[in-house]
Length: 163
Image (tube, rainbow, N blue to C red; front, side, top):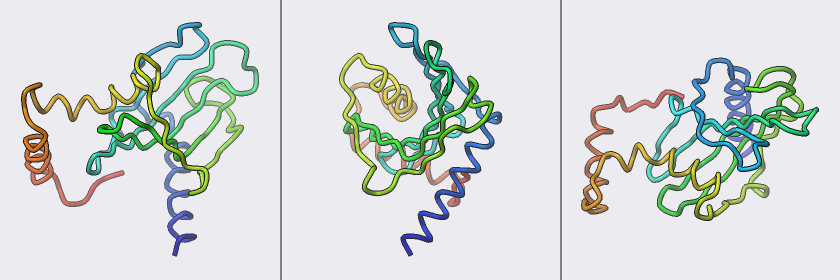
């Protein structure tokens, strides 16, 4: 059963990467040294419970002849401020174009949560991805109010999620 599930996920993620031209990339941040730009596709973000599932693009701007961009699919834990990359795809051109040089669905043994340190690129990715949840409540609302707002929002949606 695990093999079937992993195979299904692999096929799903492969198709997502092939469709990289259909993403709507929004620039989030550049590295301090100017070596990379980071983008999120907020249009395809999915929320399940406390987790966000997010496509992340990074363009390598300096000293990288073979890999000029990569698109990762990540799970983001908004409460714990951490991120886990599930799928990695490297491309020979910027914005996920050109030839695929690496395509890897991480195995269960390879999956690791990374805790974001303050004022880092990872913390900005997490904050931006999770801000849609946070924007539903004001700063003095309780956590139970967040759950109530999310349940109301989910009732309005179809019971089937589109990926």
